[in-house]
Amino acid sequence: MLFQQKFHDDLFLIDLALLLKLVSRVPNATAELKRIVEDYFLKIGIDTIERVSSSAIS
Image 1 (cartoon, rainbow, N blue to C red):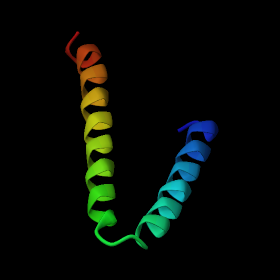
Image 2 (image 1 turned 30 degrees about the vertical axis):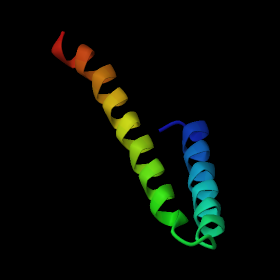
Image 3 (image 1 turned 180 degrees about the vertical axis):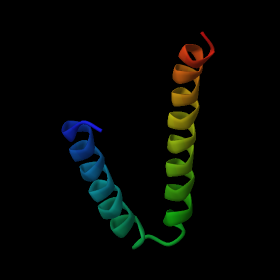
C-alpha cells in the first residue's frame, strides 16, 4: 500500500471516530450514522469488485 493511501486511510479513521463521538451525543443518531457508513462501505466494495473483476476475467 502506498504511504499516501495509508496516511489517507488513517486520517479517514480518525475523522470517522471523531464523527461517531460527536454524533453519539444525539439520541438515536448513531443508528443513522451506522446506516450511512454501512451504505458507504457497501458502495466502495461493489465498485472495487466491479473494477477488478473485469481485469480478472480477461
